[in-house]
Image (cartoon, rainbow, N blue to C red; front, top):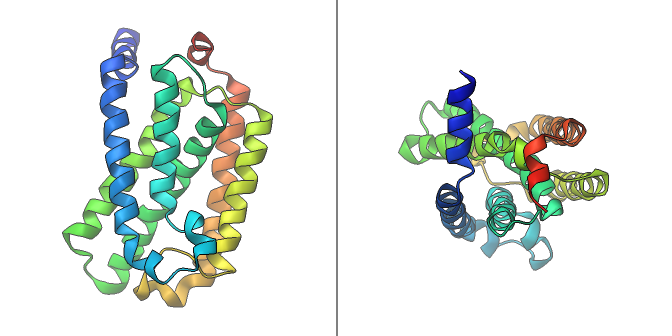
Amino acid sequence: MNYIFASAWTILTSKSFLILLFIINVLGTVYGYIWYGPQLEHTDALFYVFVPDSPTATLFFSIAIFGWLIGKHFRIFEALALVTLVKYGLWAVAMNLLAFVETGSIGWMGWMLVASHFLMAFQGVLYLPMYDFKTPHIIITAIWTLHNDVIDYVFKQMPEYSMLTQYMNEIGYFTFWMSVLCLLLAIFTMKKRFSVARNIV
C-alpha cells in the first residue's frame, strides 16, 4: 500500500503533471473570470477583486504551482490557495445542491459546477504535503478571507444565486464558519510541517 501511495505521489509531483495541473488551473481561472462577467458588469469597480471568488482561488493555486515548478515556495499564495480552494470549492458544491433542492433541477451546467468545484477543493487538500507557509502567511490569509466575507454579505457582493436569495443570512453564517474551518486546516497543515515541503527552497 505504501508503494502505491509513493508511486501516486511521484506522479502527482512530477514536473510534467504539475505543468498539466498548472495549465488546467490557468484555463479554469480564465473561464471563471469570464463566467463572472455578467455580475461584474453591474458591480462597483471598488469590489471587482472580491467578487470572482473561485477563479481567484485557482489563480492563487496556479501561482503556487508555478513556484513549485521553479523550485520555490510562494508561501503567501500557498496559504491563500489552500484556504480559498477548499472554502469556495465546497461552498459552490453546497450552493448548487441547495439550488437543486429548491428548484428540482440545475441542468448540466449546474452539475458541471458541482464536479469542477469539488475537484477544486480536492486538489487543494491533495497537495497538503507541498505547502510550506508560516504564521504570518496564515494571518494575511485570514484577513483576506474574513474581509471577503464582509464584502460578500455586508456589502451584498456574493455570487448571484437568485433562487437562494431568501437564505442569504443563513448562507452568510455558513460561509463564515467555512472560513474558520479552512483557516484551521491551514494551521493544522503548518503545524504538521509535512517533510515533502522542505525539499523546496
